[in-house]
Length: 327
Image (tube, rainbow, N blue to C red; front, side, top):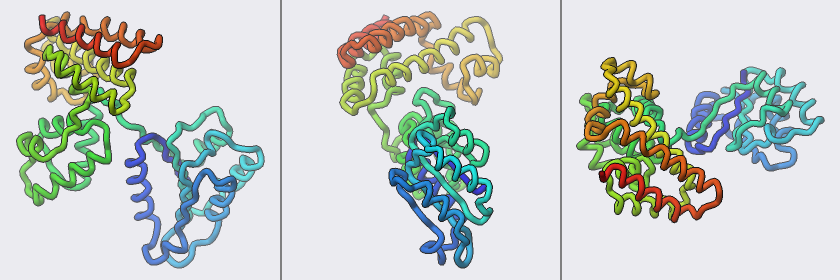
């Protein structure tokens, strides 16, 4: 199908996907005639896009019509819907209609259901910061695209340092690729720690600091995160996800389970090889200690949802969490 809908809040990933579409569809010598970028906030944006998509291609290559921040999946008049129903099935294979939006499509709308029938739909939302496995998979995928080899620990360190910022991740990987000079040996953590800029105000790092019982450093990280306008509930969600995963791993090990695949499955860890490092990290702590953080985090989440002051509430509960491990 020559119709695409890319949506999500990861604008860098969407831009990269659009560029790939451009490169694969358009002939560089005929871009001026066959490439059309239309702002979605124009009143007649979709009508113009449909008309352009039906226009024969000039010269060689294909035609690409891109509607930026399309609102067709949030609102659509009956007349426009009728035009979509007539035009979408008739768009020639050599002509491509691309819609992008930061907003999630409203699946109740007839226009969205129509696009689900005729379009290739792809989501580009940031990976949740607590989903370490997905973050690592993203690092591995992007590193593979540029021919960069990394060890497992190096991959983990990059994921921890950069988080879900795909723009920074691409920049850091390209820098590492330039440093490696196409060498066949995989880069390890010593090089990563030297060259990669870490996001020090990171909720995952906050979880690590809490686990160390370092209340002074934890309070500093909380202040930094809030000053960067990081939503308090998002911070809590990251902490809940991380401590829940750690607690499941430790409790499963303490129950006598030795099969790493079973432990990884219980904790929703895609790569069982990571358990070797996690076992070492969690060795000083008991399952009950890690489990004891969850009621505190639940109380913190409830207080925030009831309108408590974000920074003050976070500071109080972070001290409680650090005390769990200081003991």
